[in-house]
Length: 51
Image (cartoon, rainbow, N blue to C red; front, side, top):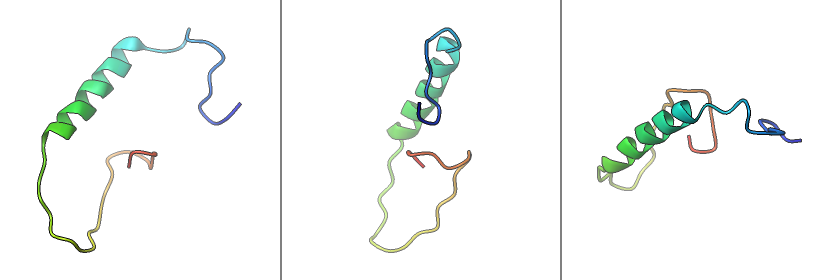
């Protein structure tokens, strides 16, 4: 199994998943326009596919 793979859903916390989803959807509501160029980025958490 790959990294983070699960055999079942017994150890999944639905409330935590819902809270994280709500946070990420909140981030998606805020849009800003940036001109083309190079920008430094920072992440609040360790690198992930969405970071």
